[in-house]
Image (cartoon, rainbow, N blue to C red; front, top):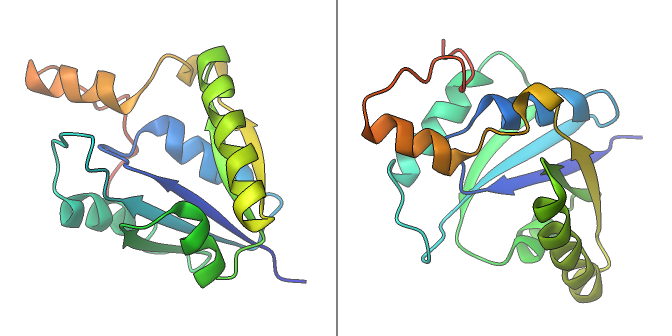
Length: 149
């Protein structure tokens, strides 16, 4: 049975924490659709095209990963691509509170369940907003993002 997950986010930028969540999920799902969202409430550092292309580049040799962009509700995208579940990463208690509420709403709207994966402790402090701030100060972020081929 082919199981497909949807991992969505702004991914501005895609961090080593995101990478680890995908790596963990590939242990129990056959395919992951990474969906790079347009978030009109966020002022992104990288364009949508740059974010999509970066993630495609990271997974260019892994046919289990597909990358798309979207500007709709995540559950609508999940239905469109007929995914089995939504995948979310949890770094801390604040993430859990927010993500649980979103999972409840998504389940109510669509019946699609959300699977939570906890980040490795060494990555729990890493967020895209922190990485963007470090970039703005021209700091080395090489240990915070996946190696790009």
